[in-house]
Length: 144
Image (cartoon, rainbow, N blue to C red; front, side, top):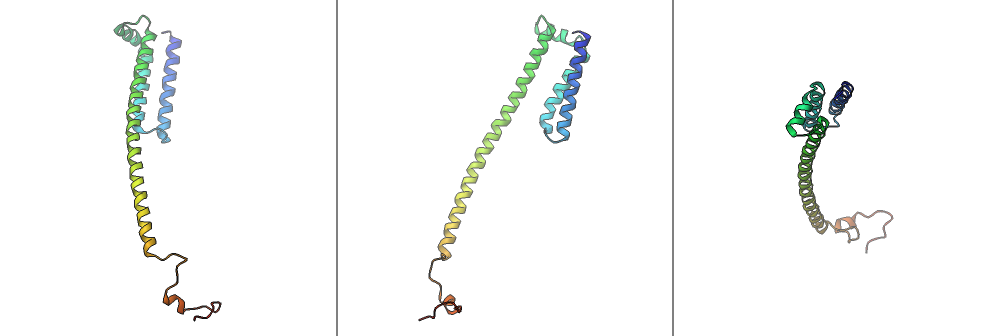
């Protein structure tokens, strides 16, 4: 890796780290997810600072070019993050399904309560009780 590439790579990693920290500060990124990004940023900064790291990783992985090792490690980290998000999404799907069931049961209970209240309370078109007919207003016709 040339010094210019190393500088640009390091600068990009530092900017990404600053972005992650700012998103956490503004509460746009939760701390549990920020941990993955912080580890990735620190790994990128470490790769940018330690010049021979890509050569060592490339030899360990058997790649010809050190940058191929970088892309391979990057893809592996992205797949780990995607796997984590898939598990979180699956858990949220199960929670959403459970909440929908509970909301349906609560809605049914409210309907049953409303029906029982309607049976007890007279409707607006029902005949008034004896007490209501004794307190007539002047506009009402006289009682027979």
